[in-house]
Image (cartoon, rainbow, N blue to C red):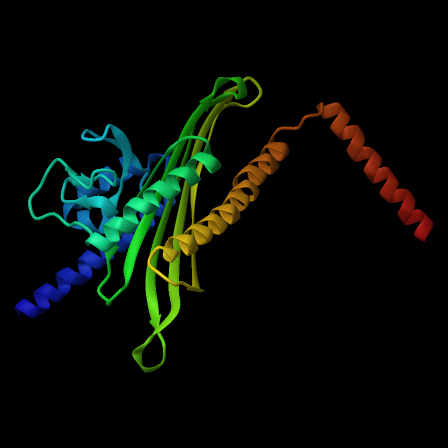
Length: 291
């Protein structure tokens, strides 16, 4: 009887989670935080599952010991505390918290320095943070690279623009013959881009465009030492971001322009009718000549 009751609760919980995730996919990405908060109030038992499954806009926090800003996400969270990549300390402080091993921490520091430069070159501002953690397999590890850029531009009627990039990687070194290292590693990358911007001008009025893209890819690349992983990861992330930027440009901006051109004509109604009449007349003349 207890087993049947437990199984029924498990099935019900899974159904609730699927319904909640399906609902989140259909709601406006701009209000994801408010929508998620409302869902957690309705189904508090799903808190951990929803927080780890739903991508939210990255939050900015200040590392009081270093005076540097960092980004918060589920990957540097332990309970209600978040670990800073700059000082390796949790805020607020907690006991028995998770910390990466010394080797991973060394790589984490180097990765934060590298992607801080990458962010400055590609984004010309914003905030970045990188976090490492161990996986269950020997020698395997995972990491996430977070980049956030927000901006306003009154001259271009941009009230607010947000770009959040979340890159999650799993790295597994492959074995060669007779258990010897092969000098190759598999890199699995999952990238999510969240975009939102509000514009306000006389021609279009108030307009909001928001959405997100997620792509996955895996590669096997050569490496010679732990630090060489960072070179491979950097080129992998750079290539993925370049492709997603182009995809965002085509999907969001291209489609928005297409829809606006169909909804709002740039020409007067009379000119549009004259153009259509001319097309019909030309088509009729061509039809007569073909006969």
